[in-house]
Image (tube, rainbow, N blue to C red; front, side):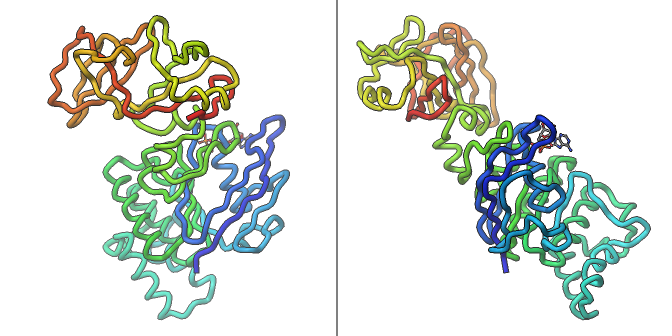
Amino acid sequence: MASKVIIKDLTKRFGSTIAVNKLNLEIKAGEFVCFLGPSGCGKTTTLRCIAGLERQDEGDIYIDDELVNDLPPSERDIAMVFQFPVVYPATTVRDNLEFPLKQRKLSRGEIKERVNEIAKILRIEHILNRIATDLNIGEKQRVAIGRALIRRPKVLLLDEALTNLDTEMKLSMIAELKRIHEEFNQTIVYVTHDQSEALMMADKIAVMNLGVLQQYDTPEQLYSSPKNLFVAGFIGSPPMNLINVNYNKEKETIEINNISIDFSKYSDLIREKASSDTLVLGFRPEYVSIHKKCGRKDHLMGEVEIVELLEDRLSLDIRVVDQIVKAVIPSNYQVNIGDEVCIELNKFHLFDEKSGETIM
Ligand code: ATP
């Protein structure tokens, strides 16, 4: 049966560094959750606290409804897979997989059944009799994941477990982890700094920065409704355009040097939520339309500086006054370097520059 994990007010310090700062998070039974953020944001420390490899300074961790703060790792019924696969030397893949089950004194029949099942799911049936240390890194990581999963732990923790694999192997492992998650209804927590891995795999993503949880949401929500500037800039590739603008209260416009855009529709919201007139306008490159002629005065205008083919789309760098705006548009659009274009925003966000919080 899948297990849930509840983290309450978790704080972990290393000297004067606050690695994790008052983290609150609930991972539901059977959920696939990714901890995502730049290096040093506290992802691994949080994972190690869940595993019991690190003791938090403050806060509580519950697995199901049991408070596990004082339980050693071996009594938490958790399995962990690391960035560099750990396999037992001078033993076969089969021995590696059987070991955790023999420790638990399962019957021979059950051990055989579980080894066959996990080997099939991880596509390592053909290497069961090979010496584990002779395998390539992708095969070793499959064995490490198999050994972690075979005893059906309450929670499977993976720390950058696919980072060292080449792209093809990584994509195939992502598909396998998703399949394992669904077939076993396994609660999985996966740490990564790579947003594309997290967006592909997770039911929910905890975006962290400087030890602080920024947003805990589904991939779709993080992409469409970021709660602050950090999440807006971190999620999405190419990243969201973030342009500094001034709000003119009298005219109810936002202004970028000599460009002025009517924002009277949103003036109540801006008055209510903004701490000053300095705002950040955010819009994703894929949510703009480009026009050669400006019918209206309230669009952004700029000069095309770079045109690149991005698979089946065109990526444009457009200079708008002193800032570069990225636009991703259909590849059949005729546009050249030096063209003056008008940028229509089909969807946008507005942030308070000081607090970084989303206004709309
Ligand atoms: P990375 O992806 O680089 O591992 P991370 O997001 O997983 O980053 P953590 O490894 O959790 O971040 O580190 C969070 C902060 O705590 C960093 O500033 C790191 O230097 C510090 N830290 C982590 N472990 C220790 C330790 N054992 N001793 C001292 N400082 C540590």
